[in-house]
Structure formats: C-alpha cells, structure tokens
Image: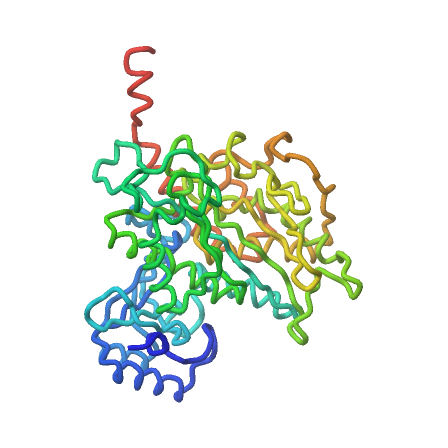
Length: 468
C-alpha cells in the first residue's frame, strides 16, 4: 500500500459531504478491505472519545448521519469521572450524533489489521452543533472571522519529552537511554547529536505522520533532556487542530515501539524546562489572501496593533484554556523559559507575545503562553477569540518590550482555580466562545481540581509529617 492510499482523497476537513463524497468513501473503505473504523471525538481535554465500528456498520452510519454517543462525554474529566448535578451537566440526559468528517478519514498505520480512523463532529439529533464540543467551539470562532471576510492561518510548535517507562507514579520521571545507550544529561537545545540519539523514534513518528497526512515541517531538540519539538506547517485552523489532536496519539504509538513514553505534560520534570505549544497566527483576506497585519508598503497595520492589544487584554482571562491542568502552572514560573506575562516584542522570545522577524506577507503573532497539554481546538479558538475582540474593540497594544520580559512583574495567574474564575467572569470571551461551553469547561476543570486537592503529596509527608 502506498502512502497515497492511506488517506481518503476526499474534500478538506469541514467541507460539505454530498452523496458523491460518501459513495467515494465507501468505495475507498471496501477497496482497502478496512476491517474497522475508529470514530474519534475530541473531548474537553483533547482526549479521544468515541466508538470502534465494523466497516459495514460504519457505512450504514454514514448514510444515517453518524454514530450515537452520550452527550455527557463532553463533561468527563481527565480521570474519566463525569460532572454531575451542575449547571450544564444536569441538562445532559440524551444522545448526540457523531458525524464523521470524511476529510479526516485515514488509515491507522500501526495496526496489523486494516483499520481506519475518522474525526467526527458532534451534533444534536436535530442536526444543530453541540455547543461545548471543542471542534464546534473553534468552528464558531472561525465563522465570526468569515463574517468579516477574514481567514485565520495558524502554525503550532509542539514540544514534548521522551521518558523512561515506569509503573510507579511516586517516582520522578527520568530521561531514557538514546541510541548510544546512555541517558542524556545537560541541556542541548538545538543539539544535532542529541537529536540523533532518538533517530529511530523520530523516523517512526515521521513515517506515521506521512501515512496519516500530518504535515510536520521541522524537528529540533529542545532544552530539556530528551525534549523534542515538532513544527507544523501553517494552514487552516480546523485542519491544523485535527493534526495536533492526531499527532499526540501518533507520537505515543511510535515511542511505545521503542519501549518509551512520550509525555505532553506541561511540566513533567521538576528542574527542567516545561513543554509549550506555541501558536503562530495571522489573518488573511478571504477574497485575495493578503495579510491584514501588513499594509501595501510592508508596515504594521492598526489591525495588528489591535490584535496584539486583544491578546494582551484577554489571554490572562483565557489562561485556563491555554494552561488547563494543575500541572500547567508549574511551567509558568520566573526561573523557566516560559513567559510569565503578556508583554509583546519583536522577535523577543522572553515575551508572552512575539512578532517574529518575517516578510510582510508572513507577518504574524506567536502566542507563547500556551502549554502543550492544552486542547488544540480550544487553545486555537481562544487565542483567535482574544485577537478578534481586540480588533472589534480597537484595543491598543502596550509598549513593545526590547529587553528580558522575565524582569517584569507576573501578568498571569499562578493557579488553575484563579484562571477558571477569570474565565467565568469574562463576558466578552464567554460571548465569543459560547457561554454554555464556558460553563461546561469550568465545571469539568473544577471537578479535576477537587480530585487533585484530595491528594496528599510526598512533599507534604516529607516536610510536614513530623515538623508541624
């Protein structure tokens, strides 16, 4: 089977699916003797929910509008527990339709038996979108841009660690042995030899990505031991979020082949750098594709200034969407490379918001606050929402920073509960992202905080048991 055979040559993700597209997908599935289809729905945490469906049953579901799932999957915590008796959860008592987006239909390359995977949109039984389904939240924001004749373009940079497998959650994670048979020590940012230590895994990641239409541009070794970064090519936000969503599973499968874990925790090691998902974003006119952040002479525009102003005003309010877990806030610290505020600078990586040195047609803003543990759909939706509000309200950007922004005061909250409160109280963001979504997200994350807050850590036992 060639690489071209491994992805259904259908329309782009999110395109209308007429009878011709459905029949072509059926022919593709039967022609490749697909045994099962994994119907995937991203939940609040970006985890994969859904069903594994035999091929012919999947074909019947295609013709009838999708497979049925309980609406409550969107109020499941990362632990698997479900929110109960709260504002949103108490209203959920029925099923939804997971409608396959055939633009995302792909082979799963690591299975021996021919298996396909497809990302599904969540719809109510009457065909209306489920408001708090992450893919629909992003689509809602993109519709607001489309109404203005604009099309966002994004490109994420995804950092992650390779770690030694362990079954003991009380033992700190450790760097795995590389090709040389030695575990990496020190910090080898952009080190070629350090990256070569994990060539077999990286080669499998690239092979899986090519087979599943995940478009990786470049790879680099980051500052931490066995910490890598994959840069995605720029593109449509839905398509790029789909790729990041699938990439996390893909990278884990590749690492498992080499008896290692890949972790997308924001801060997996105590004394090493955290892992981010920096998102580059620009806006182009839908009619001619020109970048609205540059004028005809190549100068910055008011749109860029106001977009940055919106990010500065609202990224702190949206922080729980960029840093959604209790572990996320261990990355946001002064001694880290991660930003601690939302100042902006031109090619200044110490700032939370960076305008890279680029030609006018590629002028863009990089949001460096986002952790790699963020749900890609929600993180992209939130950063675009912040910029959109900035342009609508004509919020001016603050003074550009030309020095180390870490020397300036904290501008971000340092705990999940504070970040959730800010989102709950931010009416402009709630209006753009969807008020019901915001309520559901806060409910899920509050439940996770409650579970976390019950755990007594080894630090507490070490220093408080006999000393207080």
